[in-house]
Length: 316
Image 1 (cartoon, rainbow, N blue to C red):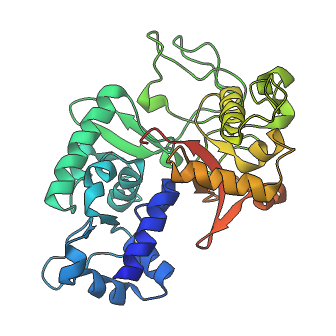
Image 2 (cartoon, rainbow, N blue to C red):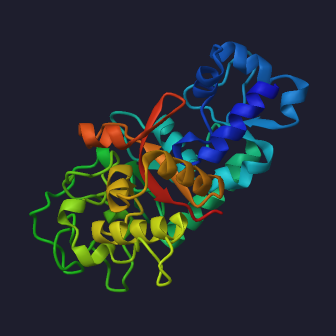
């Protein structure tokens, strides 16, 4: 148990797609099989600290690939997370029925987690706030679906009256008359050179105007180097704004924006920002974007995952 708890704590610090891990992923990180890990998690000691998102029924074991392992105190946070929505949607969708009714998404979850998750889904729809990989249709029976499953218009297709132009890597995102972005139109443009794996365009230094990085000063007015955190925040903000404000920037672009910071220093300072829960790192799943070698070289390898995308967290 101390080893399992240590791995869970480290994955929580990484955030993003790393926490909570699936039962299968936790077993991989600890060097055990899912069966051994599941047995360890069924002990009295484990049940006092850890929850499985899905409960086993009778002799039926929780599916290791879609069962998340989380610390008890994180139930509410996980219920509101993009991670749980993506895992539940992936589990519930079918090839011939990729769109899933809202009431179907909490099925199979622990009762307490399911109730909190359902409430979080209702709030997401009310606020029109969903992950970059997912679309939603509101109505009497709201539907959720992966954008990868949808047939979307090409970037050159005529836009609706609510939008000025179809979105491009450097152009404005489609918006409704009230300025909000419709959840069902939360779709990416054709992937650009530095587009992340989930389809949301990331920053490309080659196309960024020089003035856009003016917010990342190498030195303060007094002449002393500005703190790394301030420079990183400014660089991320400028690059993300240039890419359309999707809160997703490549490590490659950020390293290039701070060329005077040695790699070891950059990685150590970024690790500190992640421990403060200010940023998270995500890997590429390769579905929408084939990574260039330069992007791979700029990534950070952790627990077998090559982390190449940075997102600002809002749950600190």
